[in-house]
Length: 256
Image (cartoon, rainbow, N blue to C red):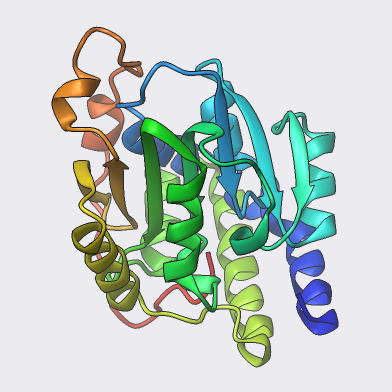
């Protein structure tokens, strides 16, 4: 990572948990991790402050967090959201072949200059039958939609409004650094092309509240994950049913 990039992501780290540590992020986690194999080890590529890592710790995984930002990793360790931290770009993390039961790439692909190589790295890390979870902002995501979703989920208005303003500021500050490199449509094309080219199985796919798109991908056939060894999270339909969010279409999210 360049010196300027380190400064930007270090600055973002100081506000990251305030912006994203919310019921909205927890709901996304419930949605995308409802089908996971039994296992012990997970790798979170581009883990940031470890909010997505905590999804897996909550169901018993030991999580290795990989991030190129020292400040992001420091905060992830301090919060206890990762069990081990690796300071590295996601593509060259140096972890062993087939070391992980689960690999996460959450809001990473749209900010990485080589998303296809990130996916190749994830495949290298996965054990046979392991699962890769990819998450990226939906094309319809906007800061107004995020604000309304958070309020509907119970975030206090003042806190939600402050997070709204922080997202705007981070997006503007990140423009010179090209923090957001790919559109949502471009990420989806990269992921789906990679899945088809590598003969992977999609065991779950969709959008969470039109805010985050996801693919849950396995090297095994989907039937292999329905043999009684699948982790099931608590029902979240009641939470999602509370959301009825309209979108202005005028304020696209520019940063994860």
